[in-house]
Length: 289
Image (cartoon, rainbow, N blue to C red; front, side, top):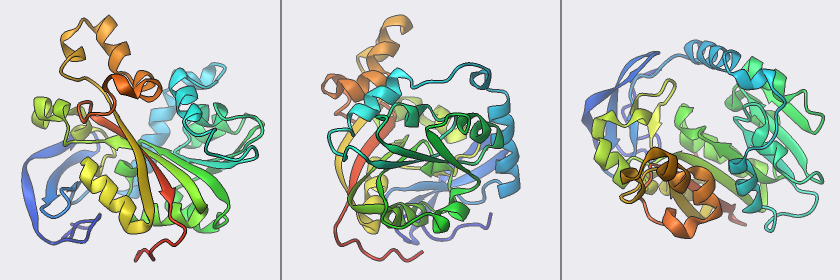
């Protein structure tokens, strides 16, 4: 990966070096921050070959592949945020589909497709008759998917792994119907929990992470490609739950609780994971990718 001299979100060139590095199993990488949109990113990340090998090995070791798979409580909670917004026969694409659990939470009347890089995870997901799984890098597969045909595109913990977030979002916009919905989640470093953890925040050091968003930089990236954010929640430890014993605190600030009951803690930027719901504008700007 070439050293980036401009922000991959806003193209700004007023960058500063962060005083710690992303220490991953795939290598140790410098981090820079854009003064304009506050986006942070590694300047010389892992190769495509290293990423492919890592994801294959990661899912090969996942015990879920040997068990009957179904939607989790988190997946069902997420699906409930969408069903009243989508037509009965909606077409849904999940980018980074893993073993297919999120798609399996959707109503049986939906047409369900997924994109998955890991050969192991893609093979497991493809066992489900309801799912059509495309295996490989999304950047390679996306141009072959039909433009303007999807009612919803989901990408959970994906955008931080990609080379170009704006190009990725531009493809999402191309795939969505006018008024279609995109659901994204990623880490948000501009939150209470990350300020508490500082450089020890685990998402700075996860294998394959090339981008570290703030809520501002994520919404900036969406707006620049024609996605209008209409809802957002945060999940993760907050000033109340982090003091509680783990058996009580974790259920209160977990993703399922935050999605299903956002009025408890999810509306404030406390937890370090952000979920956003966006709608494709009827007249979207051309994304220069």
